Each structure stands twice: as structure tokens, then as C-alpha cells.
Image (tube, rainbow over all chains, first blue to last red):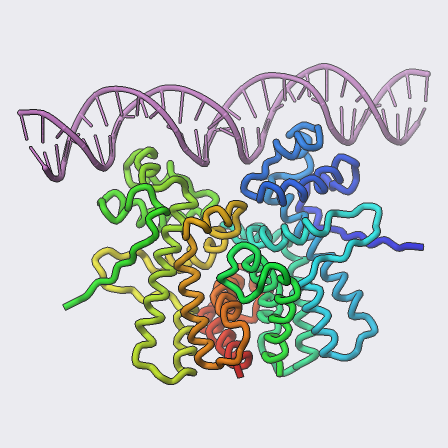
Length: 223
Length: 223
DNA sequence: TATTAATGATAGTAATACTATTATTAATGG
DNA sequence: CCATTAATAATAGTATTACTATCATTAATA
């Protein structure tokens, strides 16, 4: 027996819920492939429509623009990551162990779950590393923030901040440390592959290195 | 008597050196204003040309595209930042003091220098915080990296890494820590203004807070 | 004075980021 | 089973973006 986990992404992000139709699922699935292959800047709805043999207009019925589609994908990831954190930490009482598991989750690819409806986790991970900051480094960030489109990221940040605070209640910057862990995990992995002079990692062991670097940093900061 | 500092930016970044003409200087100066006002995505060469009453074609004679122009601006910043680090640390032998000054420089606006030819440092700072990761989070990063367009960032990273290594020679990840300081400085300041739930800072004291947060982190990590 | 370099003026193209309209098909409800 | 509705296809069209090209004009220089 299996159980399935699904996430309700804020429905202001889409015009029509892509989960409710086959073509909607194809849009998200192929968007992940295409954003990974082309990079977000070169990715267009026209290319996506060609990929899944539908019309551009159809894609526009699901998402206002490609930025919203990126947000949808990232929200899915952030929700899933928060779920994984909570799930994997269940029954683990040792506070140090809990933090170690958080670092592991943040620095390693998502596990391939067996759910029927499943995104390519390897590509999703790459997209998060390379494109996630483009979701919030935009001129209208304050506008779209009102629509709660960053809630899953904030929730994840907050969940990790609580685990930090549980380990060391006197540490004063748990939220900043939480986002530093998340963002640094992305940057260090990206640098190790693309700009190796900016890190001490080697490409071969980027996930492992990033985990070791962050764990070392985390426990020294919280000591 | 004054002395002036100028930086030779890698000449593969531009087609024609904007420093060599009045209109070239106007292009860079107004680009900083416009990128700040519109955000990099909405910024176009057409709008820039309108701003300085020249033609789009003229702008294209200086820079291949807007990404190169952003790189030019960022390279200027990175060079200037490295200069400031080296300059301000002259004659300071206390290794802890040296690190503190680095954090100060990374978290506070650039000083308004009195040079004749001078960019708006406040806006430049904002651009670095908001747009700098868009310079390297691109699909063709490896291609353009071969043209040495990230050398100034790497040099800055390396300079700071040396200061870290001087403080604690046994610390194993000085480059990763160096880029973590730089990137985290940007993110925490950005979050404090735009997504305050992701940080413990308040907007009012974002520079001060980010400095305190990073200094605390740095010295605990290197202890 | 002739030459060259820089810019302006103008035009044009392919791609992007959409919006709109109408026709067709599929699903559902009575 | 028919009528209705919803979803999509097919098609068209617009404004903007990201360029490239050409030629005339002006300014600087040799």
C-alpha cells in the first residue's frame, strides 16, 4: 500500500489548476524539462506549446506568464521540501541530529518518490539551484508578495528556523540563518559546477561538499 | 591634491570602451539609473537610448546586449570593492580587525568618492544586491566565463579568502565562506526590504543588521 | 583639404509576449 | 439522446524586444 502526498499550491499562481487536466500536467512536466534545457530566459510558452503539441493560447489559459509558471514549480518544490523536513524529522528527538538531517535534505537531490504523478526530481533540483532567485529578484516583488506567492518559501524558512531555535534558543538570527542555509546550498552547488574558483568544492562531490561546508558552518555558529 | 582610481574592465565585455567618449559615459551612468528604476528585465536599450537622446544603434555599438552592460557595471563594482578592501586594510595588522572591516565594506553602501567621473553609489549598490546573480545564473555561464568576464568577482572572492585564511589558516573552506559572505550580504539586505519574513532584520537597519549577522557568523565559524 | 571615426536617421526582421475570435470536440446533466 | 457547457484548436493580430543594416551627416585628425 502506498500513500500519496499532494500539495495545494496557492491558487492565485495559476489561472486554471494544471492538476485538473492531462494537458495541465503536461504543461508543468514539460516546463521543467524545457526550463532546465534552455534556461529560464530562453524558455517561452511558444516553445512549450510546440513540445506538447498544443497551442500557445492553451498554455496562457493555465498561467498568466512564464514567471507564474516558474513560481508554481518552485512552490511545489518548497512545499515538498518542507514536507520532507517534517516527515524525516518525525520521531527524531536529538536536536543535533535534526539539524544534520535538514542540511542533508537541503544539499541533496530530492528522493525519487513513487507517486503516480511525479516530476523529474533531478531537473527540478537543477532548476531550483539556477532559477529560484529569479522568482523573487524582480521589480514587482512587493506586489506579488501580497498574493502570498512566497508563502511556501517562508514556511520552509520558518520550519527550519524553529529547528535551529530548538537547538540553540539563545541564537538571535534563526530566520536569517535558515535562508542563508537554503541560498548558500544553491550557490555553492552552482559555483562548484560552473564557476569553481568561487568555491572550495570539486564538481564531483558538490552535494557532499556543500553538506559538509554547511554543517560545519551551522554547528559552529550555533555552538 | 587628489588621486583618481580607475579600473580597466576586461575589454571583451564591451565592443567599444564607454570610458573613451562622452556618450559612452552617459550610457553607463544612465543604465545604472534605468536598471535601478525598471529592474533588469524591463530595462531595454531602446529606453536607455531615449533617456540620453541617442539612437538604439549607438548603444549597440558599445555593448553587444544588455547582459554585457550589466556585466560591465558589476565588474566595475567588483573591482572597486576589491580596491576598497585592499586600500582600507592597509597598515592594519590585527587579523580580526581586518575581517571586521571586510564585513563592513560588504554590508554598507560604497562611499561616495569625489572623483570627477562617478557613478551613483546608492543605486549601484541596489543593483548589485538585486541584479548581480542574474549575471552568472545564465545558461551560457561556462561560455562567457571563458572570456574572463567574472575575473573581478573571483579576484574579490580570492582576496577575502586570503584574509580569512590569514585569520585561521586551518579553516578548510575560505573561498566558499568568502562567496557566502558576499552573497548573503545581498540576500539578507534584499529580504529585509522586500520579504521581511525571510530574515530577522528590520528594514530600517538592514545594513547594520546584516553586518552584525555576518560578523557573528564569520567569527564563530573561524573560531 | 582629405580621410577617418562616430553618430544619427531610418528601415527592417525575427522573436517575444501576449489578446481575441471562432470553430470543433468532449464531457455532463437532465 | 439531446442540449449545454467547458476545453481546446486554429488562426489572426498587436506591441514590444532584440537586434542588424544602410546611408547620410558631422566632428576630429592627419
